Length: 256
Image (cartoon, rainbow, N blue to C red; front, side):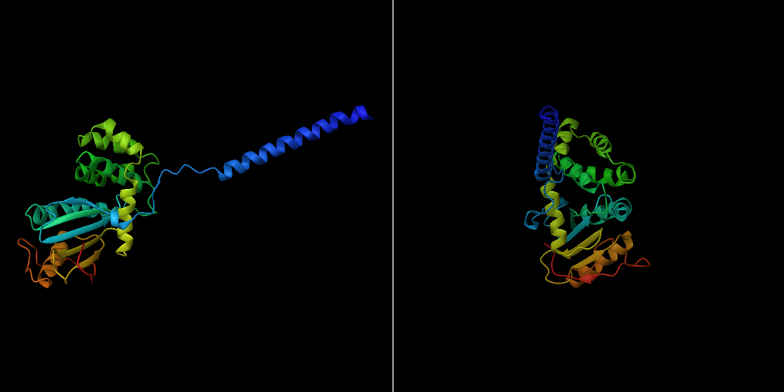
């Protein structure tokens, strides 16, 4: 009898040992810190800088909060913004500052902001900004789950050092900056993209928050009204009439 029990005892002892090891392994996996690519999603708005186009001391200050994967943002960037730059920024009347506001509904928007920030490292943010919006249908979450190849091609097209860009992109080097820009949107209670804040530098009244995309006529009408409210008069070369279905505006304090 004793000889037949020993193998059974050994079998159960081995089985118990395997179970203990397995439970230990599961506990280790459960408590092991997870590798998260987006390392800093809680930003400090005090660290937000955005990306400036034009003279920061220009009389009119235009701020945009946008998501690179947002179709309405792409519509504004490709159809209206070129005229805004030509009429206001290039003439020295306005500065234009872009803040990332990546929305959780968009799969590849953080990656796109990362690509734009890495382009900024080489002095090509606005070139990458334009190409990202132009090619949104090629890299968005509906088109691919691996947008890096498209971003690398865009980096090459705008003249970036490709190896340097890829290293920056793979390191997620500017995640904290993107998060800070998003935190600034939260601080200002921005609820949708694109949203614009337009005001006259140094004025204590007349600034507006303008949610939603718009055509150049509507944009310039708002600019004229904002300048007039601040005592600056209408902007030269502005189109005075509004387009139908204008987005309502609400008053806010001066821009930062």
